[in-house]
Structures are given as structure tokens and as C-alpha cells.
Image (cartoon, rainbow, N blue to C red):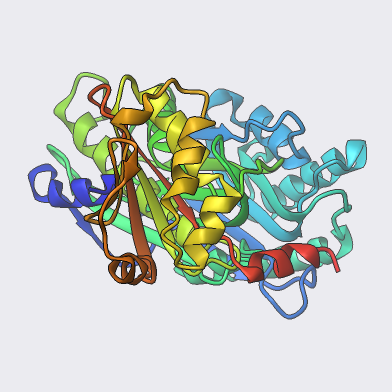
Length: 413
């Protein structure tokens, strides 16, 4: 069962329900998106801001070549405070040296000037082609228009952060705490170069909860580990990507603290938001035709279960077989064997949906027609039982199609 499904099923107990909207659903947040000419006739500049200063937390890519916007954002969030997020798409402003850092700072300065806030209160993000300088003249012209359009236009902002994505990704929930109703909303982008420890993905989250930066950082890290860090599209990790959350406290009520019951409800609501966004990213993988869940059961430890799951999810042979609806379970078994985790072959079982195709390390008697039918669905679950422990893990990925090669073969041209 999906983590997200489990949370939804427990939502009534924790007072969580889905609501319309995304980053502007929590009280006191506005957003906008415009086209400033970075991309041809498409929105490419987004802004999200709170009416009041907010507590902030972030998680960043594991790539050691962090892009200029991340360098600046890490400095600005050192005190756990922020009020606005500006993001451009089209160019990543990565591997751009000192000029890239100056351009990121210039973006923050322009937003701060338009919103009449301190420059340190601005988070900056970029996504797109690595190694190209930002067209700052276009961005400078676009920012005043962007600020003037601030409102409930969360869809404009969600569109403006996309690159090769085919759909916007947004979600919002409401959760009942002991003395306040709190909302959490989010938008995300990500379609290719997705691998754990983030990747070419961005997620911007907002909430009107009252919560300190230390606890917010811990909850965000835990939530990312269960969601975005359990997604892989192609095994590559990018230079730019991060998850940022702003909490402005405008819901009222007491501050959420480590020992309160409200912590569990807020954490579950946050997990649902990040989980749904992560699932949308996996489903929208470049050229993907299906969302694939790799479920590992019977592992000795969670790290071992995760390691095996990613070995399968990142296997090009497995992913192409999934695209071709070919129940070639031998490719899955081979990926388990090369995962680096000690596994006993005679204990291995593999299922496609509810159909067992391998039992005790050898092929099971199954219907090829039924297996192909299951693999033709838009959502596929592959379950691998190692039968040597009680730990489990789930990783989300997609198939590898002809279109993935076409998209990435011509990405800069």
C-alpha cells in the first residue's frame, strides 16, 4: 500500500482533508507567474510571498556542484526566516561562477525592492539548462509585472517553474489541530534528472501554522526522506534542486512543539503534501507512460530494502521492459543480485501486481497474457520479497520510453 494512501485512510483520525488550491491556500500567501522571455511564449518567472515574515526551512540537492541560487538561499535561510520565493525556469544558473552568484543576488534585490522587504528575506531558485548565464535584462523587466500580479494565482506560479514537465503539480490540505485549523499547500516541478537526494526538482511549500524553524526543519527533512528521496526517474542528480517551506503563523493558535499531539497531525499533513507531489513527479517522468512502484518486503533493514529498490528502479533494462510491457522478471532478479545487498536467491519472490512470476528464486507458473495486461496499466506495482527480515521500502519511478531519449537528445537545442 502506498504511503500516501495510508495517510489518506488515516486522515479522518488525524483531522486531515484535501482542499483545492496549493501555495495560496494557506492564509496570507500570494503567488504569480509571468513570461519574461526566457522561454518562448511560456511562463518562466514565479513568485510566492507571505504578507508577514515567515519561519523557513529547506532541504538541498546532494550534488556537490550546487547552483548559485542554492548558495544564496542557504545564506539567506541561515536564521530560519524568509518572506518570498522567486524562481525562474529555462536556465539553471549553475556552473556560472561569480557572475551566476551576482545574478542570483540581483534577483533577490529586485524582489525585495518590489515587496519592500529585506533582501535576506528572499529565497531564490532556478531550473533549466546548466552552464548558461541568466538573461538578466529580461528578468529585470519581468519582475515588476510579476509583483504587480500577486494574488491567488497559484496556477500561474506552478506553470512558471516547469521545464520538460507536461503537467503542473500542486496540492493542498487542511488539518485540524487542538485550537486552530491549519493549511499546507505546495507546488513542484520535476520530470527528468530525478534521483534520491533531490535532483532536477523543486518544491515550494507554504503553511499558516505557527511553528519554530528548528522543528520545521526536522519535520521537512523527515518528510523529504519519505517522499522526494524515494523517487527516481533516470538515476541522475542535478545541481539546483531543493524543497523550501514557509510557515507564517497566520492560522493562530499555540505554537506546534516537539511534545504536542499537534505535531503528529501536522507532520502527517506535511507528509501527505510532499508524498503527493513526489508521486506526481514520478508519474510525469520524461517520456513516461506509467507510474511504477517498486515495493521491497522481507528485508533485514530499511537501508537494505531501499538499496535493493533503487537498484531495480534505476535499471535501464527493467525500465525498458516495463515500457514494452514485457514481464521479463529475470531483469528484476538480476538487479537485485547487483544491488550490493546480500540476498539468498532461493528465498526471492517477485510479483507484478497480485501475480507471482518468481517464487523461491525460480520462475512461477503464470499467465503471460495476464502479466502483460497488468504491465499495460497506467500504474504498475512490482513487489519483491527477499524473505529474510521484516523491513520494507517503496520507491517510485517510471518506465523508459523512446520519448525519453528524444527529449534529452535535444534538450539544449
